[in-house]
Length: 251
Ligand SMILES: O=C(O)CCCC[C@@H]1SC[C@@H]2NC(=O)N[C@@H]21
Image 1 (tube, rainbow, N blue to C red):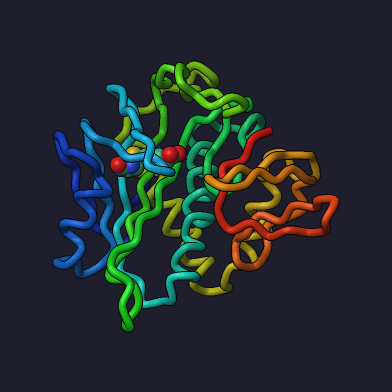
Image 2 (tube, helix red, strand yellow):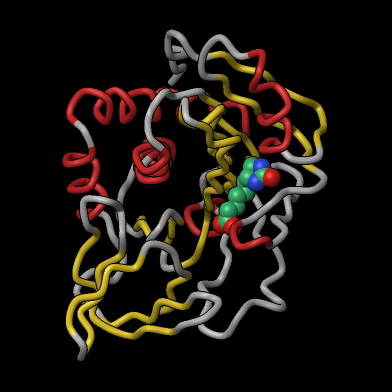
């Protein structure tokens, strides 16, 4: 079904770019409102934790760039807004929610494999707040990258097509995602993080189960208890509850 593009959001479609997040940083100073940047080909996609994100033909690579006048902590909660919008989009294009789950902080899983990732990058924090935020979203619509070199215990990459048989092109996917994001963004701006947090937890993978959170310096294993009001992962460990602001989690 044709989606109505949300009011107030711009849209650019590029034939080729290095990284849509890099493009977001370049255009941010001239922005008058939030803008989606979609690339048909992305040559140097960036992933979380300094990793490269490989974009195979037919997959989705886009960034929403905004200039919110909020504190960096609140801006960072957009990763949950974006993850929920991605979940809603995948549910809308496949027509089902079975098999879909969110992995903290902001990956989307289909049948236990990673189908989508989000990279949030902020520009220049000053007294006035952040100059911009880039919410970069990659979705393996038609093919998953080679899993070789994945860390032990990391979730395997999958594609939407291989897991569900549903084929959708990047521009149609953006039409759905832009609507889903605008809806969740309105919810966030109007009611705050509480309903976003609740909705995110309802869709969380491995909630209540034992998981491991790994950072560059530490490894913590415990029961995934919740996500707190600041978006931290809360693990129940033998030493008590620990709130973890950033980590990679392993099941
Ligand atoms: O590591 C992850 O899971 C996050 C991957 C984010 C990839 C997307 S693709 C569009 C945008 N541009 C980039 O360079 N990266 C993000």
